[in-house]
Amino acid sequence: MDTTIYTVGYRRWNTKNRMTKMIEALHAAEVTHLVDIRLFPCVYRHGFSKNAMPKDWHLQAQGGISDILEAAGIKYLWIPNLGNPEFHDPEMRVLRAHLTHWCRWPIQNGLTVLSTYVSNRDETVCLMCSCANENTCHRRLVAESLRDRQSMKRFNIHIEELKSQVARRV
Image 1 (cartoon, rainbow, N blue to C red):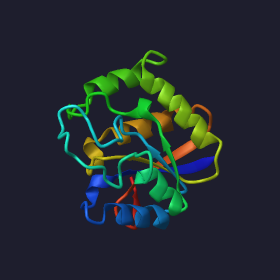
Image 2 (tube, helix red, strand yellow):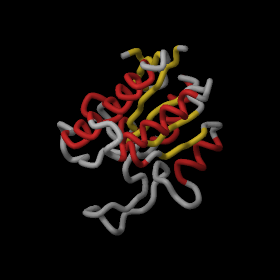
Image 3 (cartoon, helix red, strand yellow):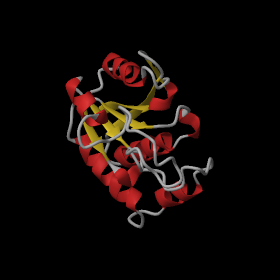
Image 4 (tube, rainbow, N blue to C red):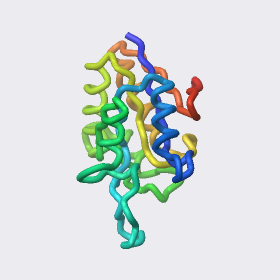
């Protein structure tokens, strides 16, 4: 079985039209399920402004990304175990170490959930985080780890990054 997994970082679009542009790109690629792999999808994080207001791309009790995507016909799933525990480290040393040790770190549980989620669906899935650049973002490592894990089950995954309304093959 072959499938394509898309990846996207919402910061590639400016804040004014971020959700609109992301939904346009998801629809153009016929994505039906968005999997949020941010460690912190909510507005407040330690070290950031306490006055920060929730935005559309944040996970909220009402409104926010899950409700907006649902209204656009796209299902939303947050898997916090797939978040990058050291998102300020450009080399992603901690994440890479966690990916190499099976069954020892939470990311392995997250990959199991994602693997099951992808395997049991005919729909198109996109992994999302905040980084604009796929080459310096953990979503690429997560997608490649998923692909490697699924290839053992003869389930071939192709990875594509959403660039705008049109995706390109990586």
